[in-house]
Image 1 (cartoon, rainbow, N blue to C red):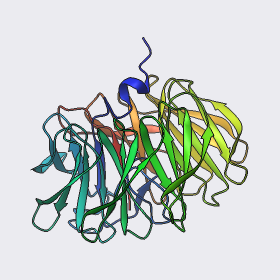
Image 2 (cartoon, rainbow, N blue to C red):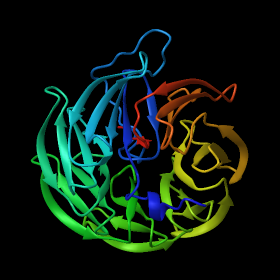
Image 3 (tube, one colour):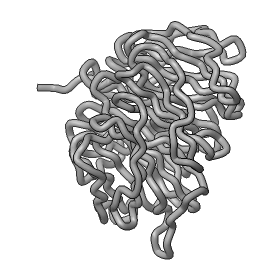
Amino acid sequence: MKITRRMMCGVASASLIVFVSAGPVWASHQSGNAPDGHRVGAALTASQSVVKPGHQGNGLFYMTNASTDELAIVDPVTEQIVKTIRVGKRPLGVTLTKDGRYVMTANFDSSNVSVVDLKTLKVIRTVPAGIGPDGVTLTPDGRLAYVANAGSNNLTVIRVKDWTVVKTLPVGKSPDNLVFTRDGKTAYLTNCDSNNVAVIDTARIEVVQYITVGTVPEGIVLTPDEARAYVANNVSDDVSVVDLGSRTVVKTIKVGNAPAGVSLAPDGRYVYVANELDNNISVIDTTTDGVVKTLPTGGKFPVDILFTDDGKRAFISHRDSSTVTVLDLETEKVVKSLWVGDSIYEGVAQR
């Protein structure tokens, strides 16, 4: 039976990983922003690094554990959980503030956001959100956090300076992933059960348009020139290519079974799509908008992909195998599997 995002999107998603490193590592999917302001799947800071010679990009992971209601700190070199911090109920989304001082977790079952101080390793604030928050993303300037509430079909906008809710914005059904343009003026949000992408004017914090895409859109990423967006449609098994000038779908690319996370390689040429039910990755060449290869993931239900800055390796998180696997992109082989606990883990968020 095909697993759909009506089962996974928000309601059944389990957790996100935040990668912490002094070395250059980045991704392009779940909660957070890359250095260029684009939405990504793994939050990155230079603090508390355990980088060792020969371990390019291997630092600490900050992960939400939905089954134990904890934020777990994992050393991927020793493959050990070194610290756990109790947050809200069923934490899913996670991101780091721009200064790297705080981690924010979106707690699905308690409908709030936990703010964890990384100096004291304690929750210092709990901010109310909508129903079923499952994603949290910072604006490029770091001033605001947008929380996607899958259960109440809206966004909670939080001012980071004082952790105050400044607006609640109605959007589509089951909002999931959000990405900002570099200048922060526009945001694009996938709405799983509306089969569209909301275009948000961030100056007014208002939806100005909806773009119809495939069935149950989940992951979204922008090209470096911000001319196009690639949207992974989990149920129609394809990727919508959206021209952001005309805000229309200009091509639909068939990929694997149940695409979820979508990430952009550091060189900007290739888009990597995690196919949950095929346990593999479709690689799209952005110059031709065609699938050029299919890569293994080494785990079950891959959902997010993180890259080293040199583009030689990818870290892949899995929903149902409690691992983060390391894929050598030159040999196209899985070279390592990091066991991260008995729970289900989902994604990554990078600053």
